Picture 1 (tube, helix red, strand yellow):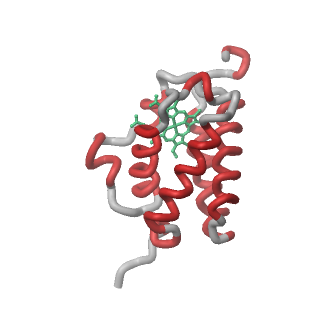
Picture 2 (cartoon, protein in one colour):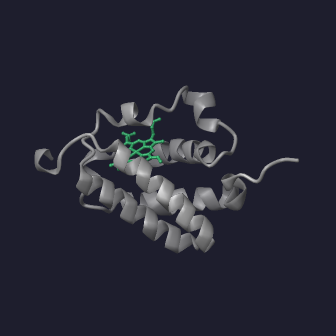
Length: 127
Ligand code: HEM
């Protein structure tokens, strides 16, 4: 018997729509624009791979890029508490746009909030 994993509750198509809706907002957010590249195509592609495995789906990110080491990969970027909040607000709005099932949404958002806070590497006043 195969256990249900969170990835099955969203699926490839909806996860892809979520990530696209998310980066549309990142690309317009005044707190995030300064640290993201203008072309968000590649980061969106990697984020789809990462979130697939984050939710227990196939390890697409690791297969192409090796160990995720997400905090280490974010160290070159100044991730302040304000930017973590901005990231999460873009994600929350994207979740509203694609209409995730409420229980799954709550589970996924709370996991992302923990991860986003873990990514903070710079105090607000240093930004
Ligand atoms: C990459 C910002 C949180 C997953 C990046 C990049 C930036 C960034 C600036 C590099 C873009 C580039 O130049 O290519 C932030 C900020 C966050 C945050 C401000 C706020 C806390 C997260 C979280 C996750 C995540 C919570 C996962 C749940 C990724 C992934 C990449 C990435 C998968 C691509 C890594 C790679 O392979 O290069 N992020 N990030 N980020 N971020 Fe975040």
